[in-house]
Length: 145
Picture 1 (cartoon, rainbow, N blue to C red):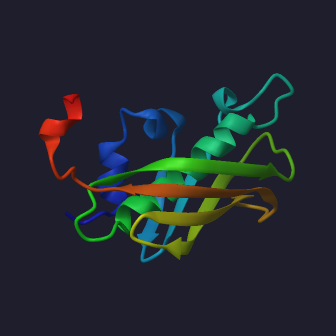
Picture 2 (tube, helix red, strand yellow):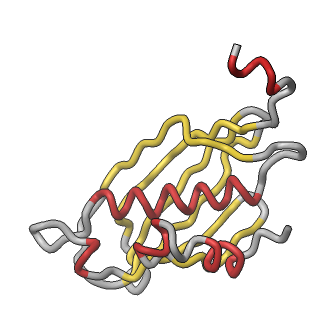
């Protein structure tokens, strides 16, 4: 399977990323770039982008990047930890997020992501997450005891 922007944009159109309008722009070796045009549903009562919208964009960006860079024989991943520092608010425009791998092991990966407002280049948030790499279980019969 080729893990391309077209693949994830089509595959996630009915999931949270599609609902939020998140679009994959580039997915490469140890990085990904996604965008999210802001709509009223992304904002909080103060008309600024809601922190949950920002975290969803950053987590999706790091997630697509992880999935595209899984070790051989891995079947998936799950987020172990995430942290986001919000730098400034914005109420309109398009958010762009770039995630870059800072650790790519067989059991964990660590990704840093920067969220900017695309037209101004102003930094909105810095995000870091740790992904736990999942492999097929060796003996499924022991799962129920």
